[in-house]
Length: 275
Length: 311
Image 1 (tube, rainbow over the protein chains, first blue to last red):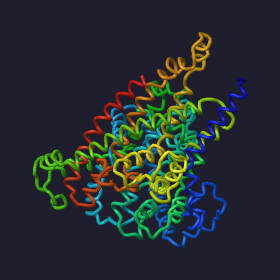
Image 2: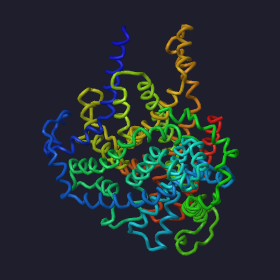
Image 3: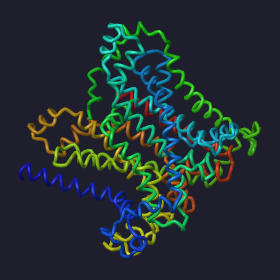
Image 4: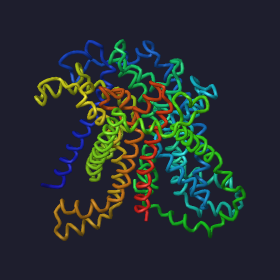
């Protein structure tokens, strides 16, 4: 067998595998685009052609999804905005300094990433209750910041480590201030990693379910994950509508991910797993 | 993808003491690290301390200052058959999903480690499950595995693999595997990218030398590939295990709520139900502490494995 033929075989095998693996994704999108009668047809049509984007958009007014999406965007956006500077300066210190405080912080960060969130649920609940923050955006923003800040610092650390120390030294020697070197040299050079981490923080807040479900019961403050989860066992919502909401709530994180995919994958594959 | 694995500047970390930067720092580092320290102390260590304390308080007293009852909750957990059941479910779920996630990730990484037409497209496409929100994954699999209208039941029946519809989420024998499949589907890309980075870091000369020496492809896999990814494997498996054990919640909870009849009620799900459905916060704290102790044990193993890997 020639190597070209072997390569084609490999391509074919890879594409068939990928198609099978992505079937759930395909099924979600096509269900969201089909009329109810077509969704429940038996036998189901695995290659439907009667798709209409209008049906996907119809859930915007048939359900509360617009409010949920706005709530989620606000909470995840604010949390990310707070996490970013905290994580960046901590990551810079972790990458550039060596001392007992630094190693203790690094160890604590790694250990907290292993902590089960179920353990934090009761204390957070008691705390938010005492502070009168149950059923508020504030509680969810705080919980998401607390959850994302350590791991974001950890992911950004490897981004700063990849900036050559010599460049910063040169800037300092040339009379640049410490802050100047940070903002003019380190941040721009670490930008892919910083951007990927920002997206990571946003996606994990967008994805968050446990805290959002526990600290908020008033459906006016629901985020999209809680709203979507509330459909299970609720037979008044059709599968077409559920899949439409699922598709809409997948879009923002997926689009953001596309922009930073490369740096994201690098960060997880190297820095994310490093102890 | 190997850019940071082969970090040419990594050596600088060790020579920092001889560097002008260190001498010119004016702000003490603890000031810079203050925000993250506040976060770690206020939102991790203190709450964990509170949880441990809460597990020793009498039922219904946590909100009003507590009343010490010793290890009563732990003793009652030891006698509770529901708790035993959830331990068993947790072990089955953790072991099977970690194993399957690793193997699927390895298969995908081996597939992508070859240069072929469309490999970068396939590599990106296989990341899609990883970008999907957990609740979305749960409802999509809920729809696929639906008893009456689900596509999976249709395909199985049509192809003759099953002669009747399967209650993927309603049959206690099957439900644990259904939630496991959804979990593996969502997580395998993480294993894939990690293992692919490890595979790409293997020097090609090793394979060339093996081919010249007449090694079969099975032998090269056994004697070159596997040893080269061993350290990554250990770290990855432990990390996946820690997460499957202590973090997996959303997919299970949204798909089955822990049912049917507790068949998918892992420790984390049961802790949530005790705390926020039955409102037994003290008992939930005790259960959380059990999860914590087991997580710490796994974490210690993970840190040790990682140290070995970086050495």
